[in-house]
Image 1 (cartoon, rainbow, N blue to C red):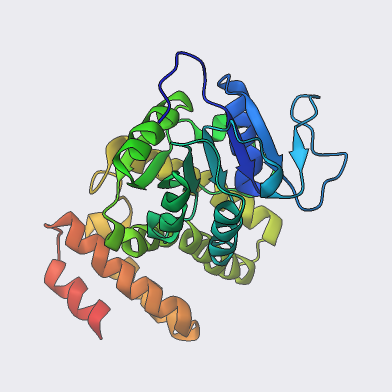
Image 2 (tube, rainbow, N blue to C red):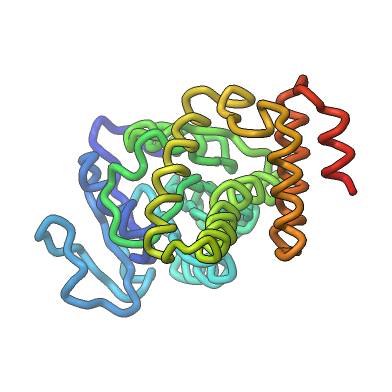
Length: 286
């Protein structure tokens, strides 16, 4: 395992949305790059004008590598594990990690046969491409795996400005589901809201701008004030008439109606005590 005052050498496998940000973050944090595996390199992939030590295969990464992180799709991980094992691994104690949210470190178990240590190291953040390393500041990383590898992952997380959370391996799908529900489904809610705003006469561009500001503030409130303090609007007020008018309109929007009713009940439950609670619940459960 790594026991040196020098920064560990890192190899990044996959320079996509996640790998690109992590690579830039490692460089910013002062970690030397042993290699970056890119299947299809192009001249636009330069961090801060500096050429990366690029290779097109994991077998070309130098043996003197301390940390190898697989930033690839879930189904590609087993094949890369086979490549690592077939090449004989790296130096003893190298940590091999993946960034998949729903998959535990168990998928990496074969690397133990070449004296490597498995780690699941998932940043709970949304990546759309081209972001700066600051995107990782304050982000929670979900970890599981070998105890020494987890210890290393926690140190690395802290150096990137993140926070660590140990996820029991069997709970990885549940952990990932929570992230998808909060992130991807929020985009789905925005899509539904834009649809309603278009029908109210607003253009999609105007709608997304308006919703972006509103949803950003809501996310900030959730981060700083939590629940139920971040809940506002007719549900907090117990405003029967407004919610009834929403439900009347939603008769023309069956998909939105289902979501509205389910989330309204969640809000009321979170608020615990609301004026007209029983009446609201009866309306929403119809």
